Image (cartoon, rainbow, N blue to C red; front, side, top):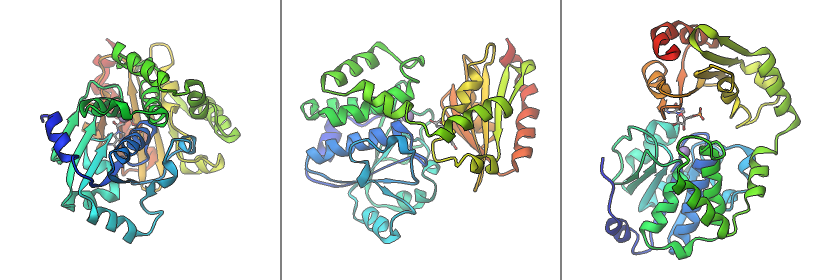
Length: 338
Ligand code: 5GP
Ligand code: MN
């Protein structure tokens, strides 16, 4: 896949367009932050912009500028969504590389006559877009939005709100600036965002220190009761049932980050969380070093993602999914233990 040029993007956006921006199912801070940053930027260029998400998103993101105007598929009238897609000149697809990640909205985007633009940092992008701005070295899609604004020579349109939306995406996708994707360029971008007025302390507090009491208690329960460590394979995993989620009144986003506790244990190289959801078992994978969590997810659990952070799903029961997961580990014993 090759990226479109600055000239091509400038031409595409040279006159006011009807724009729809969408992002992946269960948007995280990068998905929502980059969508809202791009939305605010394009509105400053006099485009008409609607952000449509395939599902709801965690409440700790409900401070990001413009999120109150996001249309959530299945929460608003279907004809409103259909009209937005029918009238769109351009659809921006942010922070996903496979159309299946927008779930029920996939046919709407696939069938649309609008020009499609992919802005993303995931590996192995599908080629469904007419214009691509893809870089799998980027720490976050939000970093690419910052780059995109510069590509168009419109950096003077950056402001505090756009800076905070971009900051939210970068801080979360870099694990608070600690993953190997955190380059000197990322720190330079962050420095610029602070100069634009982004309030880093406020953003960290809103994202990381706004837990409900039950979320913290659920974490304690999961850590003490639901964590299995397989020393033989340097692997740790959690499995969580739907009724356990219910006991703790679990909300969207409440299980985010749980998987990292598995990886925080000495010698653990591979961690997973298997969660029983309405539509099947959803799995998150994380790894340290060379073990390719995305290949594991793609080969066995209809998923994908990044080398060290991936996800997938299973149509088996939770117990059967756990058994399948454990049964696969011997195949990878060498790379997990070398
Ligand atoms: P998370 O565990 O936070 O849900 O997802 C981590 C990463 O895994 C995401 O950024 C995304 O790249 C990838 N991912 C998660 N779920 C799926 C999935 O069902 N399919 C694919 N292809 N990638 C996924
Ligand atoms: Mn991302």
